[in-house]
Length: 401
Image 1: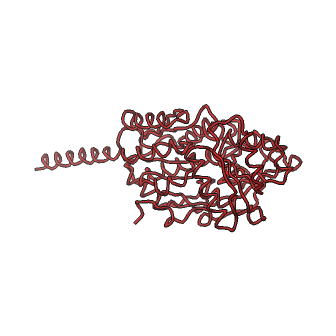
Image 2: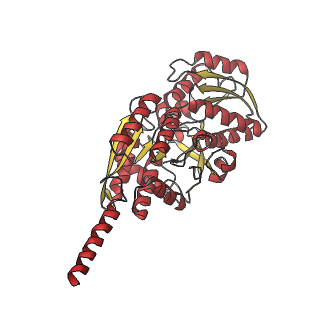
Image 3: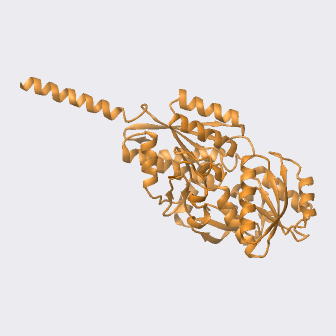
């Protein structure tokens, strides 16, 4: 009897171990940073997003529940077919559990669908289209850092409050640009402003002259740039050359990353308003992270790069708490757990996948105000998350009960 009992105990132990092992899809928790390594968004995302994910893993100890954590990366080249192909290969052949970052909304929309079909996890920091938590939402996707609705709420409201209430948009001719113009125009009109017109500009444009001439001809008080990265920088530089400011028009860069302002220089950027989810010099916690990041990258982190670190850390904490990398279980835990770190205080993830946190209205300093290379912004206002981000009931997410 004693031998039989010991045999049953041994068998039960083996079954329990097998059950515990089965909580993980493979012997590694693998993250894939899919980003722009070589084009106009690479400064704001790119290598910095990869480093941020690696830092999060290192700070977590390199393992979760005894399983090693691995980070791989790829350049999606700002092409939806390339990004989609990489995502499928990662999920099908390389045992990737979660894809991270993905600037360029058209690619993110494709990866969102693939991630849902494969029942994995999508941690978005780079893309901006509010459709990703609206009509194109997914139970497998979490949008961490910003979106076109929040950018519009922060910038458009601030300018309209200053009586800058007629707008003309120069819009990047792809998913992000169109979503940004749509959300900004809606905010302008909802707050008593008018839209004089808009023009679409091709991706990675080198010459904005014809678009800026149309903006000048509109006589609008504000020229809204519904673009990002290198396109935003080029448009701002050429707007200065065309004398839009001297003619009384304001330039509103609806998405202006810290690296954009740094590249422009304060002589050109001074006075520009921007919406930001994170600024490195906000408080002691943000400065501590940013100085560590700077030591590795040679630049202060953008909101997207800081968001990558925050999202990856929260994801790993959920795996540690639940003992599994099962997507549904981990996402449920992430949504049930508040976010309190250097990036967000009292942040939370809604059912539609939107991480809600404070946004900031910042203004580029005058050169005489800056005390160093990256001392670029004054924070003018903090906008609570429930005011900055679109109410969940208005998004049209089909998974909301």
